[in-house]
Image (cartoon, rainbow, N blue to C red; front, side, top):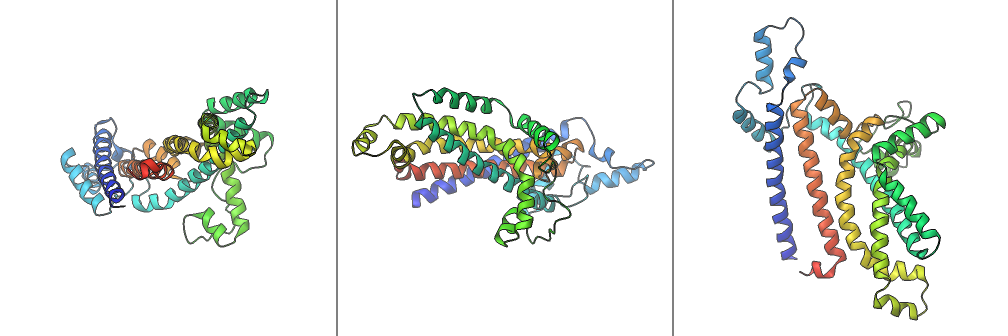
Length: 337
């Protein structure tokens, strides 16, 4: 346990250094690219004095080094600055939008694990039959289509041809939505408000499918290969001699050894899934940090972009740390190393 705690602390230290590096790179790049964010805020007829005052208010009147030092001190104090375009605290905006993205990404991950795991088990059960190439072809087709293409296809099918699902937003304005937390889906379920839960879930179906289908296909392919490799091991043959069915062999014997590499790859792909929320949230007008990131870039909102990049970086680092711990938990040799 002390070794594990030391490993976690060292990783957290490296994470802090990584976030600092990300912050430096983004801070410098945002200030050397062409364009002036203040120019998008000033009204016609503003005097040079008013423009200079506004530039000073946002800390853009000094050198890059001095600006970075002021920004770094503010970040360490928990102040992410004020959004140039929305005129609100960046921390407040992140607190409002991040839970929506986390709920969407978590739902897509659960969907991908369930569907991908089921397809992998089904593909293992029908190996060496005429159904195996059919399963592999369908899985490969799903894998080849990017998430944003799935999003556009789902809009066309369920929003135009068969309009049975809401096309945009997170919840219908007509539904009572006086939530105490920004985690609408979890809160509505925990408080047994099933009307709100059903409405929120219906808004999430298409974004979850768009994000989850490619990841499900990846999980299915990797897990199936791991299961097929495990099924020829000696302990599987011994269990088969005891009269166990193929399904029991897969679920009780092979799965526990095949899940390790699948978890590692799923964690890496999950970080890409969170990055994919930027386009998918935009297509469905879903009020998460991905949708807000596009607006921030369009408006060249420096404080908001910097806050978003730090949040994305922290999420990626925490996910990778969690995946490493899960892999170690499923692998006794790594757990006791």
